Length: 399
Ligand SMILES: *[C@@H]1O[C@H](CO)[C@@H](O)[C@H](O)[C@H]1NC(C)=O
Ligand SMILES: *[C@@H]1O[C@H](CO)[C@@H](O)[C@H](O)[C@H]1NC(C)=O
Ligand SMILES: *[C@@H]1O[C@H](CO)[C@@H](O)[C@H](O)[C@H]1NC(C)=O
Ligand SMILES: *[C@@H]1O[C@H](CO)[C@@H](O)[C@H](O)[C@H]1NC(C)=O
Image 1 (cartoon, rainbow, N blue to C red):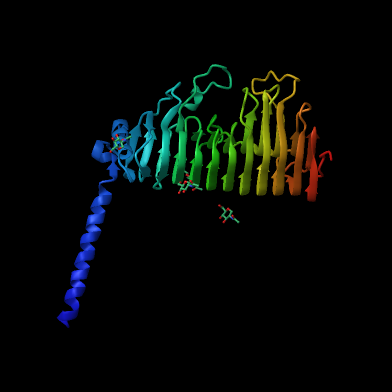
Image 2: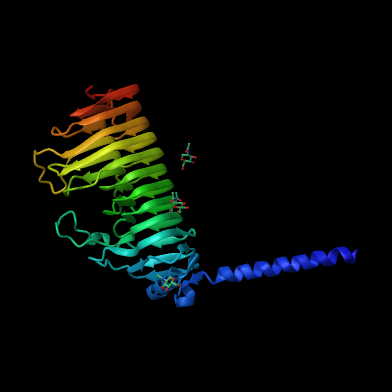
């Protein structure tokens, strides 16, 4: 062995090791492990204060801080994690966060993130909303002034966020709710609740722009994704939806001065056993509103009741008046939509007599009737547009 060669090599290795250790230490200062703040992952001890303290530590730090939920099951009550923070936060869920079993009626959230710029939630962990014993307390179908159940995660005024590789199970109400968010991406998110669970929408948004939802599986008792007023530039691809009520724009027109829903794209997605697949719904009567520039492309529908549906006669309180909707729908494209419908009307475009739909485009539609043996058909009212390529069922759009 030649010592003259190995000694400098060894010294170099030592230097590299020391610098790696120093770097590690610097990083370690930015990890806020909830166990260091008193959390106990036994599934029984309330760890809300520990998580809140770990959050505050991360939020006060500059650079990127990691709020770490290690493996284990941590019981959490309703919690607000509020910014603005001095840096960005990575909320790393290795284990499970478990909500209380009780319904907690009238509290609108389980975990709320508010006023945050730069947030990542990841780690392969689980958000267990423990909804099953609470769903029976949801009486919002019967009562106007019902007390709502908590939403698993609310994001209010959050920008530049990336939620990926997390599972949300059995939310009490919606799984994720976005209000006034910007540049927000969901990727490889798994959302699961039974098909009979009430109001367990996967992702609901309003007043939010540049929202991306990719490669995610959503199975719920209500809409897989629902877009409320002011949803703009929404891009959804690789969504496997079902069971559930499908992907829904609306309902709209229920309040005055609603912002438009515009620039929405859904591509490369499948719907399996859903009530609706692609839906736009507005109330009747309604306030004024706008839905424009919506594209559904390369979508496979397996056994949905209403694969394509525009419904401008939506009246959930069952007192539907003959007055028409004032929400104007224009430039909606359905391109390369294939599969099966479990009802005879596979394409239902029921627009408002007051403001008819314009610029509806149907290109390469092939929807068969599943099971019943009948032929799939289309239904149209006040719907103007054009067709291209194959049309099964035959289109009924007016030119
Ligand atoms: C941000 O850092 C400044 C200076 O270190 C500090 O005074 C302030 O409290 C921090 N803000 C938050 C939200 O922690
Ligand atoms: C959007 O947010 C991501 C973080 O999730 C960030 O990396 C990216 O730079 C942001 N894009 C814009 C245009 O701000
Ligand atoms: C989603 O999570 C549920 C519950 O953990 C699991 O049963 C299901 O297999 C997962 N689905 C996907 C597509 O990963
Ligand atoms: C479509 O989505 C599937 C499922 O997420 C994905 O595997 C595939 O790569 C996507 N294809 C395109 C062309 O985006």
